[in-house]
Amino acid sequence: MSEQRPTLTTRQGHPVRDNQAMRSVGERGPATLENYQFIEKITHFDRERIPERVVHARGTGAHGYFEAYGKIGDEPASKYTRARVLNETGVQTPVFVRFSTVIGGKESPETARDPRGFAVKLKTVDGNWDLVGNNLKVFFIRDAIKFPDMIHAFKPDPVSNQQEPWRFYDFICSHPEALHMVTWVKSPWGIPANYREMEGSGVNTYKLVNDQGIAHLVKFHWQPKQGVRNLTSQQAAEIQAHDTSHATRDLYDAIERGEFPEWEFCVQVMSDGEHPELEFDPLDDTKRWPEDRFPLLPVGRMVLDKNPDNVFAETEQSAFGTGVLVDGIDFSDDKMLQGRTLSYSDTQRYRVGPNYLQLPINAPQEKAVARTNQRDGQMTFYVDGGEEKHINYEPSLLGGLGEAPQPEKDYHQHVEGHLGRYQTSRTADDYQQAGDRYRTFADWERDDLVNNVGNDLKKCPEVIQLRMVWHLWHCDEDYGRRVAEIAGIDLEKAKALQPLPGKPAPGENRPGSTYSGGQPE
Ligand code: HEM
Image 1 (cartoon, rainbow, N blue to C red):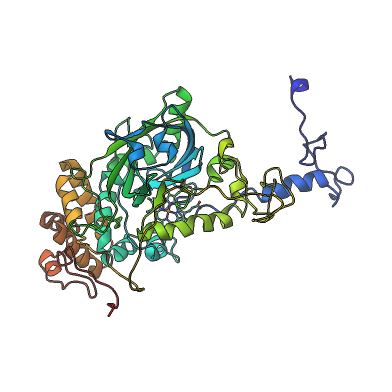
Image 2: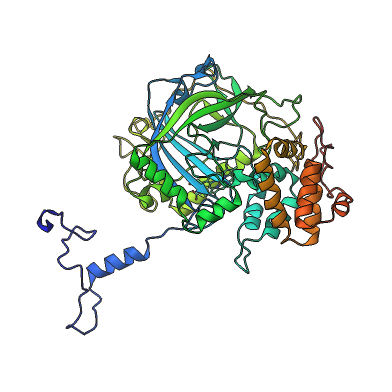
């Protein structure tokens, strides 16, 4: 048996004749410094870890494919977008998906109450398209500058190293735009049963651009064919008592069994523009686009059918970013999307290294081979300039890489405005959609929600308790009243609070009103 095995070597290709003992002077004597084989082995081991992701550290991945229906609803997809990945039928686009939780470290329990990450890398014939989403369709904040504050508040206290409810609700108290997301996360939707029975959403607003250069605003969503299943706090605690990896196990085992999970890819579209007629801002990611007015239109399907061969090489080193779009899909002015787009590739140059895009898991597929004039840097292992190796600049009269042809009609956005810091979105009634959500939950979901928030608030100082009940009461009177009862908070005292300084009172910030920190003249 052992004769047939391939020989173990060092990284330099030298056969290893003894992997059991280091070289030493005599049986009991000291080891020597020229112990190259030992030194190579141990120093590589010393470097086995890279920094974990600053958020979404705990995750699991799978490979699969995406197929477009060639239609958006009943219309040809090309009416909205020239992106071939959404237009062309009969093509299987390879995908890699990483699911995750947000706040806990790399080995944290997967039963955590947390949004779930749903990041998809589509290796299209026109280069990569990353759709870095979550399971819920909204988010806590709408301006990227708040993200570090939010994550600090949700992560453990820097002194006690404990995740504390008072830190979470202290942040929420000053950010009423988060109430909608909080209502989702503190309900059973905050603990999906596993990754297969879970929705996905790009959350932020993008644009689809067609070959006439016309743009539409778009939201992207993944709807699971397996259905949606969520857990109560009690059910999650029971699983966590004996399994901290249940979601990874569930996905891995299902794929090994040949039960391949599948999602339908859907879009919501609206014409490009400001939409003053709407009671919400389509660029505000704390609000949903109501599905009765903006239906989910099927566009394609995704199947996951292969587990990674190696978790580190693929899942851990995979790098997704919101800036990674293909022709026909474009950025909107959603401020979260714009801030995120800087953050992902920045952290990945630090976390994985400047040449992270050369790694097979991140590199584009064969039909979209990368050919750049970027050179060198840590861990370069190939030169991606194509046949010509000398001309690493552009343009050149002698050869080298040339630009791609311009599309006949491109999309040109007209932008005009006063430079400033605009603190609220145009139409930000931050209480309405949170209240709608409360009212439309099933009874058991509402019961779990008020119990979770009420029990959390018991551990918070009075100033936070009162402000949270005030906020929830403005979302829905019953919501505020029930939470106050569970937490033992004086509802009348909470209701008597004044609106937060500098924030519009509930219901005051209506369509058409613009608030900014310093109005332009
Ligand atoms: C991961 C930043 C908002 C979904 C990350 C990472 C950073 C980051 C730095 C680590 C990436 C890595 O190490 O590879 C931000 C910032 C945000 C923001 C600055 C707001 C301004 C969001 C939102 C969503 C989201 C709104 C959901 C739509 C994800 C997912 C991952 C991630 C799914 C994990 C990707 C993976 O599996 O590798 N984010 N994020 N993030 N973020 Fe965000």
